[in-house]
Length: 469
Image (cartoon, rainbow, N blue to C red; front, side, top):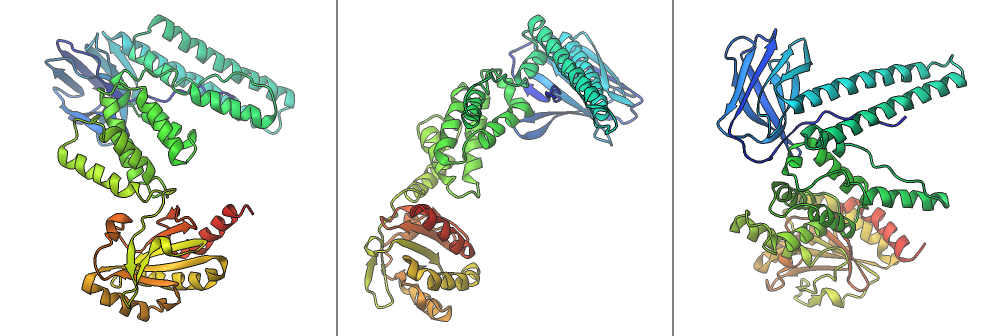
């Protein structure tokens, strides 16, 4: 059956200015003297205010000016149960009446938006119950196929009724917050396509992705204050966008391009995307961080960011950019124990593994047996392993002690920077050890920052892809 359940909506938004806000809330049977008002901010839940009873079960929320319009939560103690209500910019003086035993059945006086909102929730609740009852009846193994078909038809009629109800609200009340929420959560209707099965699937996918945001007004800052928009954006990025940096960058630009650069929602998602992909554990997502830093933070589009933070973001991007997957690895000069210089690009090999380590690193010591085993097993497959100790200058003496102690002599080269001239840490963005890079014969970075024990598994996949097996 089609999904017609519309989730409850929670958000606070900006809708302009009013003279004052005065909301009375009466909850019969509620003995606690505290009521919380809460809202969503992106993917966060925040407290708006704490109300104290003016008399048993009666609360008042008052401001001298218009408050942010949207959908608020009233949260009761100690159960943390809640009810939802709308504050519309045109009717911010009203009364809500509910019972602690039936907290979801709220009545409003003096608010058209709340009247439509509560009626809608009650209607959807009733239709959901009918659909559940029909679904249970359909699962009965004793009924005939003919009866199952009749039940399916009845469920379809319920869906049609809900759609008709929604259309009526959209037509009669185009400017209500309730209407905005209904439109935002309606499914995109994908037309029928012809052709082979795979072709039809691709056409449907492309149409759905192209029209995914059709029912959403990104010029309205109120969108930021509902979990619905965040969930929709997450779904678009995580499920409708191929998991490759270039594709993700295109989707980010599309999402942000639908927003006003001066709006609160634009500011929020610029920061959200930077942090999400900057903190991602998925290999290669640092390319998205670099894209965000260069295209948004580096072009003067984030004036709210203080200078110190901006410098840090851009510095991180600069350090990352030269060692992104697909880039040519920096050609630094390092030295053997006898001070013979070795340039990375002078090492001829079908595949080159660079393993940055330091002698006092416990993770390096624990992973070294895996590296030594890998070097032995793959040396005849065109793979050379280079151990690069990150100690500098006179401290490199500890490197050679570590090479001997951990049996690293089997590696093709063991190198360090005894002259402290390579800037290896910044060149390869080595901030922790061990750090691993795999390069091809042209010294292009194929992959990086992988667990040492996974080297064999990953190398097999690389060889298979590169050699077209």
